[in-house]
Length: 272
Figure 1 (tube, rainbow, N blue to C red):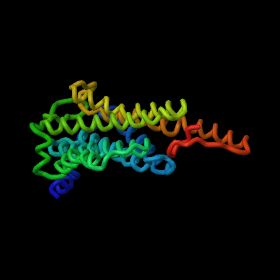
Figure 2 (figure 1 turned 60 degrees about the vertical axis):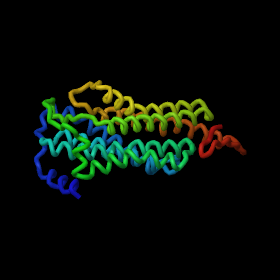
Figure 3 (figure 1 turned 135 degrees about the horizontal axis):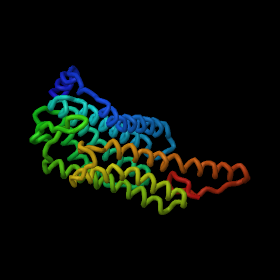
Figure 4 (figure 1 turned 90 degrees about the vertical axis):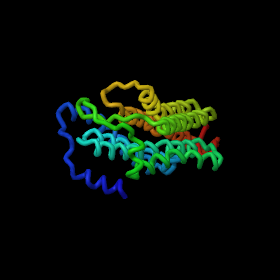
């Protein structure tokens, strides 16, 4: 309740003055949001795609993460930036869980229920802390504003539990990509390429987050997830829908020119 009351109060404050330089900095963020939204709609409608709803939820989590990032950039006060950073935390916690669920459905792999439930413990704790006023300060120790361009930045120390949570996120999403690659060994060459492109798109934000944890940044602002999400989602689109169009055309030509057809199936996927 405290979180939502603080959010309502924050909505009344004026955003930080956006200069031409600031608008240029925000443009990739806005482009990544539009691209992710389009991919989310496409995935939601693709009912024949295994795990299409889980992937759509992962993309919604990315949208929450990126919108929180824009709000954090443009908010002029420390309190406002912390609220938007809490919104980012919600996307941060939901994204790996939904991505992993998609990989399980897409690959046909199974995970023991106890282990699957255990993966939710840290993300749920961080999400709960982000939504409660007393605990949100725990996530932002030594929070302070720093002079960066084109927007004032938010900086705080990383507690051990945050580092452990981010490590779980990186490992979990990496495992999701591994499951998709492992599935491709039983498929045709074109579908293996498809799976490699899809896995690369999933792994790109992991690489960007790992660089942040190592203290490597390419801009004055620490979070560059909008770039890795944007480029990664382009790869995910081509991995899911780009090459498959060629496969669909090949199979439709086969059906048109043969009286009988034999399909070799691996779960839900045609492999020959």
